[in-house]
Length: 242
Ligand code: F6R
Image 1 (spheres, helix red, strand yellow):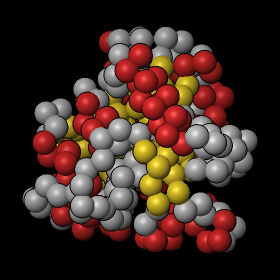
Image 2 (cartoon, rainbow, N blue to C red; image 1 turned 90 degrees about the horizontal axis):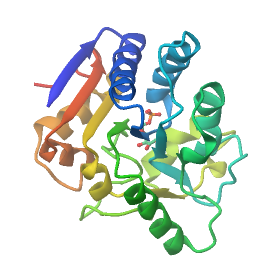
Image 3 (cartoon, helix red, strand yellow; image 1 turned 120 degrees about the vertical axis):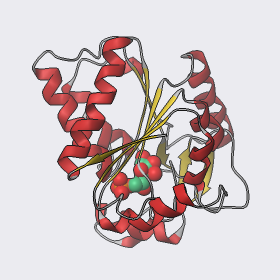
Image 4 (cartoon, rainbow, N blue to C red; image 1 turned 90 degrees about the vertical axis):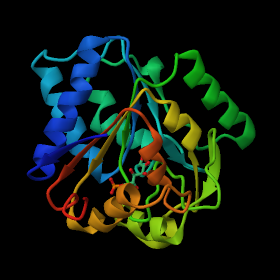
């Protein structure tokens, strides 16, 4: 595991964007596993800036997002599809046909999970998986549980996740209670994991996940077993990591 200590959120974003950018330069046909939320927003902003300067070319890239709210249309402002369009896809030359998220509106959720897993296999697997981490240790929407889930599945969101995500909605009632997420098995099969984390509020969970035991009660702890993990965190988030 390699840990890069960044000064602050901006420095974290720039360092992580450098790693993703290097991946795309070394392999222009890279499959990027992407995340949404506050943590990666700065990374995408930086990548868009570099794209505009002709420093990075997304034309051969495939993107596979981690998750999507169940029941949410792609043009809903809170959907993860909308987030990705706004923060990255609309601003770079990625082929829209090569951008994948679970279909939040899929009527047959089992079929949608199978379809999504098949997409990942057909693209040759994920080269680098960008991850944020929830306050309860979730990665993707793999919430604390008794077992590690393998493939794409639908999960009920933990109450703490609903509360953390309500900042993006007008009120808590609007936060969906279920989401599609890649499973831990699929995340662990990514060839490189890039976890980004910022802020004092994440310091405890970072210590628990990486200095504590590997347990599905802290889903991110499983990353201790992956052979190629890079953590880029700011000083506050890494302040309790030993
Ligand atoms: C988002 C995702 C989540 C977030 C996590 C942290 O696609 O899969 O696991 O990475 O909830 O969210 P932020 O970055 O908003 O603190």
